[in-house]
Image (cartoon, rainbow, N blue to C red; front, side, top):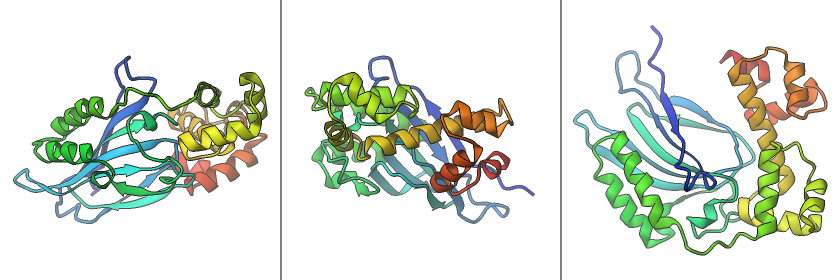
Length: 261
């Protein structure tokens, strides 16, 4: 018998914060049963984003056990997580470079790190307490959404050139050369690198590489075309072999294996 599948869904942010928030999302694994008693291995792919995540284990009587509120920094590699049955997650995924308006933390220091949110600021302790009183995944998601307003700072430390550079890297899905972006916004490549790295935690070329990879993932998941060569060219790779090498490094899988999973 095939084990029940984990559940994942995303919700778009309201227009007022859509430029800052990539998505609100939920993820849960089925309850433990005779057929499903072991941990689920979940592969997380790099996306250039930072996340604020509340997770807990759900007891049979509905209580929350082992709750955690964690800030995950950006990363340039995939990670495999072993998740126990009856574990639930709700999260906020910030657009690249936009977490700074909510989390008064260094994106560079958070690179490939996960930190307990309550240790970073007292407001996270209050949010954590509210989340722990939730009775359902849906209620926890609503609580996290409303708590976002408390996190948003009135001041915006992101400079206009850096914001525009991130916008161009994102809108081109990593296909626009960094040298061209620097020329368009009128700064040196060194200044561009410093600003983007401080905001995102990743240098601009690495962010572009990851966003190009994510565009490839979207093409492969849509199954609109089985022509891997065509997908490679559409996503800005030199050829299919180039795409396969990048995909293997960032996902730990070949594109063909990814499609078949």
